[in-house]
Length: 66
Image 1 (cartoon, rainbow, N blue to C red):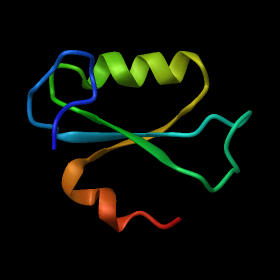
Image 2 (tube, one colour):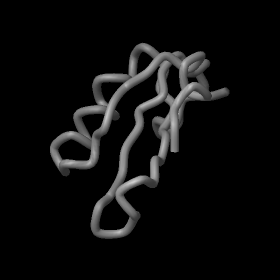
Image 3 (cartoon, one colour):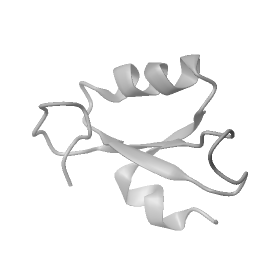
């Protein structure tokens, strides 16, 4: 899995879980993948907009409910 940051080809270490309440149902979860370098940038981008739910290690993404 590769980081979702534009132009990055690094391996993803984190899943940045988010939801846009204007577009998605409350239970819907979207995930951007992030390498260690881009984790904070992607999380901040979503947090400022009120979309960020949580950041999880990639190996825990399959353990989510919903």
